[in-house]
Image 1 (cartoon, helix red, strand yellow):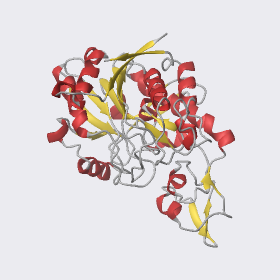
Image 2 (cartoon, helix red, strand yellow):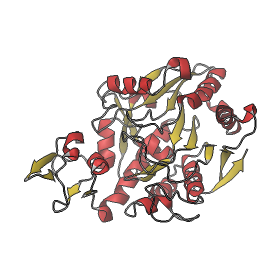
Image 3 (cartoon, one colour):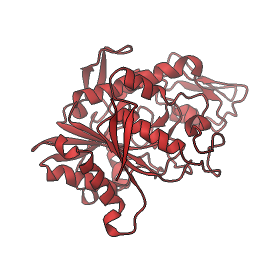
Image 4 (cartoon, one colour):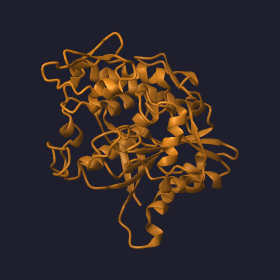
Length: 368
């Protein structure tokens, strides 16, 4: 089955075509008005950005979605879940402070903030999925119990998943800490011969799995929860997974979690992808590196696989930025995500998502 994906470029020559109006227009053309019923408690799933990061979706562009939900009688709230790794969003207090610092204030967005997995990530509900890796998944209770949902995703590259879009936003972002652990379930390894002993990995490890022995990092396998934060901050890139055996199962587990979020809101969930500031890293890092391709535009669809496939294709159709982290596959049509990190398998989330019934990789791109 071919799914419809609606697309706005960033070109405009008038006030009727500004970014906020394009987001509102996508909401209407994708039929999201029909997802909202009078009195709905509507979750608007976002990523508020780690402190120091500035490539997350602008709160100014969240406002038109909030306004459209309210116009249908819904009661929108902006939400995310706490992080597995230590940082500025590890508990709800710090998370809310970070969101406010980044402009997600009621006066800007028109909606309150709610961290859906509770103060310390223990607000959990199990949802049956009956898939290969999980019979049930552990999701944030307040995301599950919302009446309807709009998933707003900043599309970018990712250290482990290859890219992060709607699928990853639902999967990791819809899960409390225990669900994030279930998805990762990988072990990190250090090339001690190349380790420079900076100890950055030890400072960010939420499980206390890293120790320094003879001024070199060591990761205790029995403590490692596989969050990958150590790998992200390592300046010498000497921390890795056994990618040949770990990456595909990780991607499949992540996709099954996304399936769980979509399942509980079947027929009541819509997706918006923002293809701007397409950075080489997740918004979970406390920086924003130079974009790997030029800004592209905004997409909307009722199908999470189709919107991520279209986003993936639009990014790869661009010529890569030579002054970015991207060093390979810069040509138009080259796989930018494997050009960044050849060990990743970005399309597993698409192919496996289609296999388990999350959506379709076949899409019709409708330019508005």
